[in-house]
Every structure is written in C-alpha cells, then in structure tokens.
Image 1: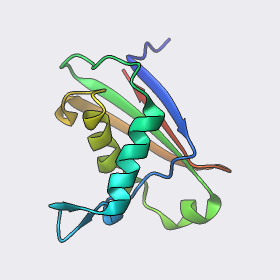
Image 2: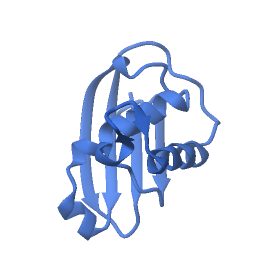
Image 3: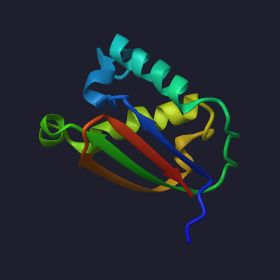
Length: 117
C-alpha cells in the first residue's frame, strides 16, 4: 500500500501549458499564468505542511475535455504545476522530485490530481 505524503485533487481548474505561461522568454509571466497560480493556491488550500527536503515521487493526473485532450502535450503542463507546488509551500524546491509519472485523461471537467510520496 502506498503511503502518500501529500495527495490532492483540484476540480474545475484548467492546467496551464508552459507555452501560455511566459511571454518574452521565461522572464515574464503572462496574466493567464498569474491567474492560474492564484486559483491553484485558493483551491489547494493552506491546510498542509511543507514536505521535508527529501527525494519525492510525483504522480500527476490531468483530466480534461476530449477536445483539449487531443490537442495538448501532457508534458507542457508539468513545470507550471511544479512551480505552483513550490509557491504554495507544498515542497520547498522542485529539485527534490526525483521521479515523475504524468498522465492525461478525458474528463467532463478539468482536474489536476497530485500525489507525492
């Protein structure tokens, strides 16, 4: 049986692609990215403790409508979510994530499911 250090399902928030997160290179966040980070933090809540600085395994499941599922690359959503986990103090630094499992699936509503162990 897996023991999760952190597990959360966020419903109704569309994950942002790295392609829409920055403009003018990686230096300037877009308004869409700022909105995503704000909403991610609100939906994540603050009832968690920051995980210790140790190697972690991340399982990330992304639910999305069929139209988006067929047009998007799953890996483009990874970095904005990792950065949001750092900014929300779930993890101190994403360098501690040693293994990532990433899967997208067709769903009626947008979902971001996060499991850290």
